[in-house]
Image 1 (cartoon, rainbow, N blue to C red):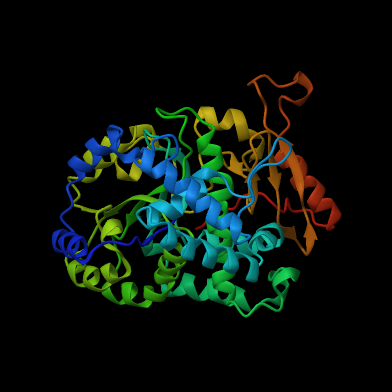
Image 2: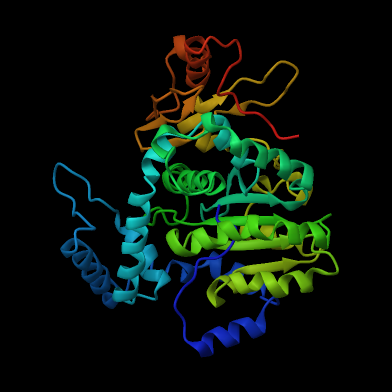
Length: 418
């Protein structure tokens, strides 16, 4: 999901070279690199001998300082190796640099009770935030990396005002964060990043892909800026910069590529101040595409079935809709889908915070102040019991929540942004 930036430490020479070359990055060369194994360098099970040593050194340093607990026969490690490697890659395997960022992140997570936030956030508040930032289409690129879309034109003054008005509702703030000094907009953004790390990436890691030994730890973003005027860009500057700062500080190395499409004639002016949010490594992952480059570039990274129709692909997915899962993902978490609403043709997807735990999906969040916490098992085969074949576990959760709160509305059914 991260829209903007994950800073890495680089020499000034590298920084200057990268900045001088943007925004003319070569998408063909990048696609070629992604099609091979070069992109796996520094990832789990693709480490050099020196990188292996750095990983062990980093884990030991974190352990000595009480920030990491190794796994045992009966208990998992406090952090998996893929997570530790994100911090090392962000600092080019400088152990001390990685330790500083890791410590700051762990302190930040504790101070802001991030796990409690994700567990207790109001479902409607979460979904309101989802509509304001990059959204997972439910699909992946050829490497298994999830594909997100961000259509900027929908964030007009009317929609932004409506979103901002929801911040003043005290009932929308989780009890665990009533006294938090962090603005509501950021608390919600934290929860969206947690969904990327704790649902989307783990799910994608369990699906088939060319290198199943390496967990998925990043995302691709299609950023559609068509139909956006200079004034709207300027008004959204703070909104988009929030995501940049957060990703840079506490969610390093969670970006794979950004494809900017529909850039207006004045975009070089906008790019002049936007690129200041980026470090050179991130800048090298951003591609500003002309209309003729969109489909060829996107299809060099992903199948056309993963590209939304509005960009020349075959995927029936529009901005604001919930994920449209492929068949393989649906076999695992199809229980989170709900049947089409009256007059609709598409199934929807349970909204709000959820966790993918390998053998189960945990449904979190609160509706009308009441926890909806429950668990749905992940099937080991695609065969369901006949008696359950036509029953959606998500629909059962919806009915339970609605009854408990005296509402006739299915409280967790996924709405679609207008």
